[in-house]
Amino acid sequence: MHVATLRGVVVCDHVEGVVSARQGPFYGPLAHGFACGAHIPVHVSRPWNAMDDPARDYRADRETLADSWGVETAEDWSRQVEYLLAGQNVGPEADAVLNVRQTLLRGQGHYDLPTWQKAIGDLPRGQPVEVAELAELAAVITRYESRFRTDGLLPSDGVVTSVSGYDFGRAVNMARWGFGARFCDYRTAEGIVLRAGELCRRQYTSWADFSAGYALGRVLRFDGEAYGHLYASVLGPHRLLTADRTSPWWHVPFA
Image 1 (spheres, rainbow, N blue to C red):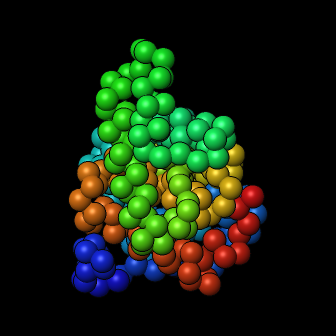
Image 2 (cartoon, rainbow, N blue to C red):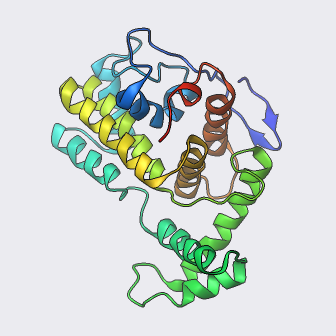
């Protein structure tokens, strides 16, 4: 993808693409785990199914971890991995709000924003975030989901069920960077990829369902309804991974 605008979204000034490593897994649990972390490598046209990247050395991975994550030691890295696998990095607020909506859908079969916000107001007190902020978060999610439907991240009647996939997907890449930075051995990194894949299976029903959750987690964390580079950097990989016949999402079963 080169510099352009797409329905008002500024897209990236580098090429995105689905790239596979010949020696990497294409089927099975490990391939599934790697595929859960595919948004990031597809965004920069790197292999989705490889732990190491010949285009980088351990210094580059250490710089990435230090600059983007504040990770400078193996202990820092291990702690961040556990945060991601626990879904704690993206924060609990969005899933708390989404769970309220799922309860409404199970009980009533439908919902609207005012009903959703009222149900949020009925949550037990003692939440780490004020109820008014959670109600506003529901409105932000509603606006993002509307844009997702326009841009193909959700079907016309689709909603996001959880944003924890964003943390799980990043855990896959944290395993990759940790291995590259020599903070862990291959077996440890592989175990993280497998755990992340299994967590995605438990939380979501399909690649499309997972990708929408991953995308919402990313934009809630960083985009601030700007619909700029951070939005484009997840929309482009989603489109490639769902449309490109060489994508793992076409040949690796989600369930």
